[in-house]
Length: 91
Length: 131
Image 1 (cartoon, rainbow over the protein chains, first blue to last red):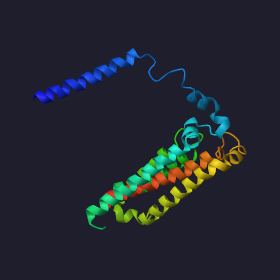
Image 2 (cartoon, each protein chain N blue to C red):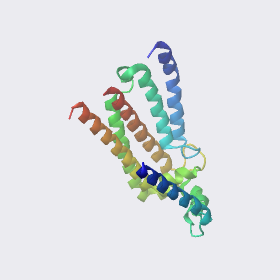
Image 3 (spheres, rainbow over the protein chains, first blue to last red):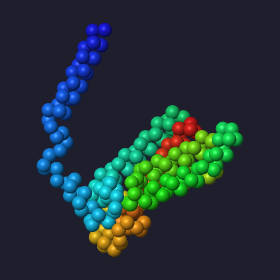
Image 4 (tube, chains in turn brown, orange):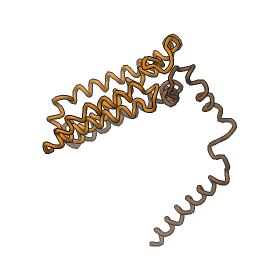
């Protein structure tokens, strides 16, 4: 019971500190050095020809990152196939 | 499942697939893209599996064809991304804006990624329902 109270109090402290720090560091996630997002927004149409900025970023500016995501999907498929085949005793 | 679910599924699944294909093919113009369109197509296939069972659904969508589609789409995706490093300046410039056939490699990669996502999700649904 004491351990449960201590765990609850520590989780509450972490939550409160992170909640206060959002208001303390004003402009969380925004700073002057973040220039690449503005570059993407202004130049994506003429660089890629795609009207959808999200598709342009996902498939063109950061194409290798998306190839890693597809690799994750393929790995998930292989993992599910392996686990279910082992459980059914087919391998 | 009973006859009501089967009849509704038979009527509504082609429209779900057409909507998913629309979202995949318009991924470079409107919101959406390969992931969301592939998930919509896979949801239609899951409805087919629930209504007709695995045996009935395999008459129109066999699992071996899905394995082949997944591997083929993955190979095409890697090939397109590697060829984009050398040829993207010659492909993207030729096309206009805001058409269906525009944006060069973004359209091709959307289609390849969408086929990969839908094949993977339908295969996982088959595995979870069969065994």
